[in-house]
Length: 528
Ligand code: FAD
Ligand code: DLZ
Ligand code: SF4
Image (tube, rainbow, N blue to C red; front, side):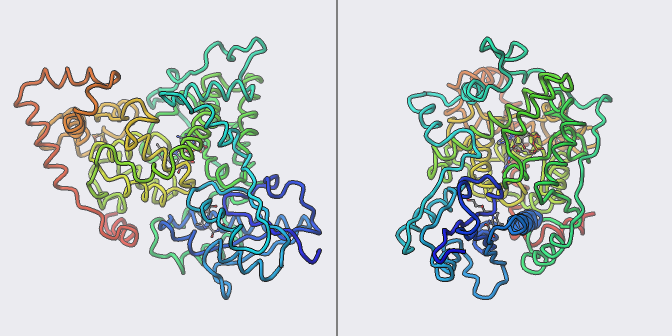
């Protein structure tokens, strides 16, 4: 090792061998720094599985790098003198290694990037911050696309990405299959043709078990349980999870993308977001595998296009959107939602069967699938007027795939409409009908989905009209939603009063979260 090596700090969501900061480096001239730090483990009270996933994946990645001949300086959470923050740990590493330069790949989150940008003034050597080109759309490219546009429509962005990557494009420049988007074919309700094969589960090895002990000891009061921890924590495991998806589930991914089934947590979803987001899987590579499944006749166009759209469309779009609208996005509250998050988001104890099941999955797996996050949990927070800060903190804490760059646009802009409509052209508001159509939740719910008002009515029904009524000034001029007000206006005053009174009584009955982090598991156990 040279006397003054180059120091390469690698963050917990940068676990990729081809990371920009590693490219071109030589093993005899580079010290890689990896840090388990309190600031990251506690900036929200992450689900226990999320911390285990990151720490275990970091430790495995460090071991792989060492096996390949790299020098890795790995700081564990409980190491003596751990400074508790990225900047503090880089400062200590600068003392240890006297690097001639620091090379780091840009952070995915605003808060961390602010810290990185101060390093050049803090440390006695030059600091080079490199772009994170695991994302296909650079910040500049997104800005160029967004500048001057009145509406940042995802579909337009997505088509550009299709043309640029060539994914599902024919030689004549037209989309494969003839259409750009097959979303309308991806809305099957659950039915007897559904029989999703199980998602591969990965038994915790010694490294993971040691981290589980650490997390129980240090973060025992955080939400979630560890009994069912089965996430991939290495690239090999993540590849096996991807193999199983492409062999067994992609075929029906499309049609059942929006379906929900009580007690079934994975359905035909890929369950790959945790691995993609921390760097174990390459998003473009996954899209190419999906395209190959279509070319080989193993999966239909609506499934493959749907999967590719989620990744080069939604995933890239929300990342660009995040950087375009930060830091303001974090504090946006255009609908002036002020209600506290209800306690049952932590305990799962509610008679609303759809919410209870989505929260159960979240608690047990640190995961809920997209339509649960959007149309059950998200729809509830929107209609009930839960304040964006509480909702953001909850989503950021409870999902193993949550990082602010992807959580915040989905929460603030997609589900809460808190940015006033830069992402969504209208709020994703729905009554109980939607959930009934797309799931089997309602059949055995204590509430009746067909009952609109009064005792026993599905709360989504009156909440829907309460939401529409209280936001009339802002929404009635929206051409995609305006006609809903004609229906409302045609109702007689008594009917309207019934809706509003039923919703008010329900909202008044909500118990605000106290210290749900700690009490969640106990209350659940008591209720079970
Ligand atoms: P699949 O259904 O198999 O989809 C394939 C991939 O597409 C996912 O792995 C993911 O990488 C990507 N994707 C799909 N939808 C989105 C989206 N809306 N935004 C970005 N990427 C998408 N995803 C996260 O990765 N982290 C989050 O913190 C997160 N928070 C969300 C919050 C809300 C309110 C909503 C509505 C969605 C959120 N999503 C988030 C998107 C989506 O719910 C998850 O990516 C998905 O459930 C992960 O499971 P999967 O890998 O089986 O996805
Ligand atoms: C999520 C997370 C957690 C819980 N802990 C760490 C950690 O101790 N060390 C680390 O490098 N990364 C961790 N992460 C992921 C980071 O929060 C993530 O890499 C940054 O927020 C990206 O900007
Ligand atoms: Fe959810 Fe309403 Fe259906 Fe119950 S009846 S499961 S609360 S949508």
